[in-house]
Amino acid sequence: ESTLLNQVKIYKKGITSGRPEYYLVFSVERLDSKIVSILFEEMTYTGGAHPIHFLHAINYDLKYGKELALNDLFVKGFDCKKIINEEVKKFFERNKCSVINDFKTIKNEQDFYLTDYGIMIFFQRYEYTNYSFGNPKIPIPYGRFGRFFKKEYLP
Image (cartoon, helix red, strand yellow):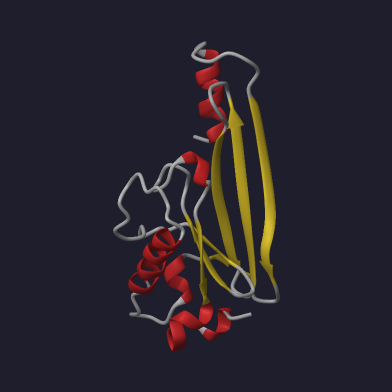
């Protein structure tokens, strides 16, 4: 079920007061002859201290007409998790994040989008950090993966 429908159900149960709000904003993060990568931000508010934000991304291979998973970007057999996990841990340490859940590894279906410069790994609010930090976004340059990043997906 969508975020909007869940929030409307909460509102109808009378758990919250005020008028519910819903916004959906998107930005094209990469668009070239090979890839379109779009980031969506949903915001719902049904009362309480603050709205709830969710990020979603779609990464689409224009040549083959298919949505890309993270593993599709790398040569077969390469485990991208090691490098990504290192970068995420460094990001949290460097930004002195107030981590509410210990980060161990990215998910198999990790959220990401592509830019002209690299992969942007992102997490939802409260997944690892408190609300005030926002949605953590960790940039990882394509070059960090060396020859293991498929050339056909480089800008």
